[in-house]
Image (tube, rainbow, N blue to C red; front, side, top):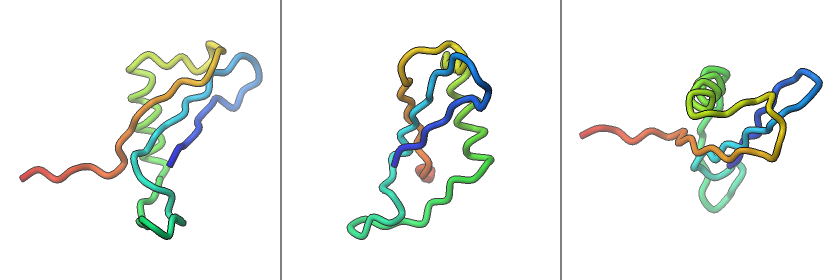
Length: 74
């Protein structure tokens, strides 16, 4: 499943296209119940900004990987 994020203000914008590494919830072959909450979106934005995303720079979309389902330790 992909998630697109961009600034809401007018002007130059660069879309962040986030690969969540899960299938869509309506995928009948591999369904899941992962919820994308505002806290997750905030974390994605913070990590993308730290990795160099400049949302008001313009240009083509930036692909960003964010694994929603975290692996358990041990």
